[in-house]
Image (cartoon, rainbow, N blue to C red; front, side):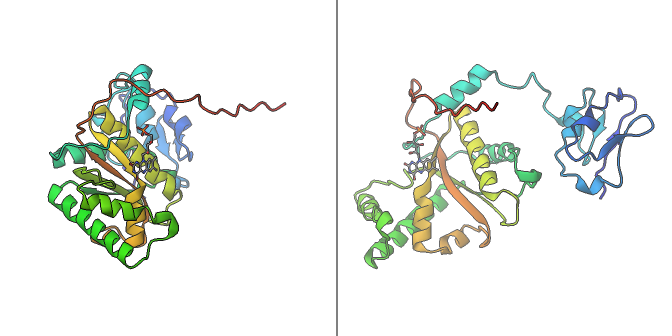
Length: 276
Ligand SMILES: Cc1cc2nc3c(=O)[nH]c(=O)nc-3n(C[C@H](O)[C@H](O)[C@H](O)COP(=O)(O)O)c2cc1C
């Protein structure tokens, strides 16, 4: 396995930070400078901690130039900003019809692809509808499928709610998609170590990034229930591989609603452990 690992000897201060931080101990302090241990190199999970932890930017792995990384900690937001983001994020159910550009969406996805995944497997597939015409087709086909399921009495007791969803649609109210111009689904191959967590973490990061950009999101379980009621064919039409583990959906777009303050949640339930 060639990891394209190099150490710039003019910059390296031989501090050993890369050796200490490697989670699988594949780096060792060779004669003078860090080097890969050939017997352990196959354990590398490509996390790039060695590149990130090097104080002088002397180390490159996987051909990455440390100068292309964001410098830390000066690029990080303060805790007050992150707190406001977490508390101020809301589920948006009123969207402007105008779409975001594909460039904005691609940049958001590229950022969110930095979210952690079990064993750094990075297998998330981001399925996105960035085109309003496609969104319209998808909404219509979902509703048509639900209508057929209602007519054929195929709705289970706990999904009987969809009858009202179809009625509301006929009256011009879109309870499922909320007229959002875009949709994101994250899926992963079943063989990854932590499929459910990988999906939910990526979507949560997307939601927070979106909120920081003034873009509204809505987690949506109803779309998943609707698709599972109709059949998997719509998933196929979305190009999501049959064997993928699928998560919920995030609807997103520019909101027409603005929230002027945070809500005030009850205190968190904390189970504080003391072991003697
Ligand atoms: C996994 C998940 C699925 C959700 N599904 C839906 C949904 O199908 N439709 C909807 O209107 N809201 C949905 N929500 C939004 C919740 O109702 C919302 O988060 C909650 O009411 C709290 O409001 P807030 O997000 O503004 O704090 C979902 C939220 C989560 C976390």
